[in-house]
Length: 85
Image 1 (cartoon, rainbow, N blue to C red):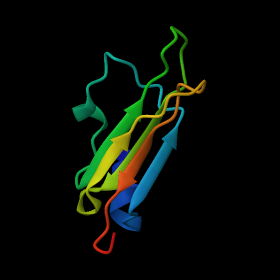
Image 2: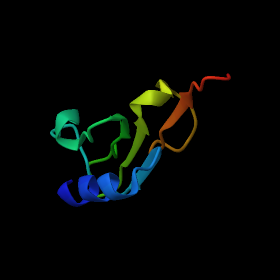
Image 3: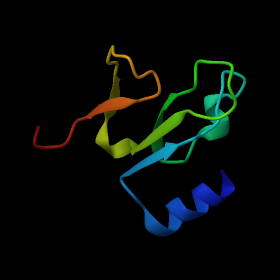
Image 4: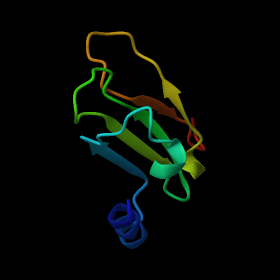
């Protein structure tokens, strides 16, 4: 996480997507948080090491998660509200 936070400070992206997070329900959101970003996560459901995705969106964008029902469990989507729409 330290390396990710350093990169974020240097690049200052609006959105960050991470695959193979290896996160699971024993890892709290606070351990994955990046200051100034809203975190959306989807951990691998199976008892297999690996997988998982994280999506970070700058807090200024007022993002909210959108849940899709389909056959691909490891995905995360969000809706972003901008000033114009």
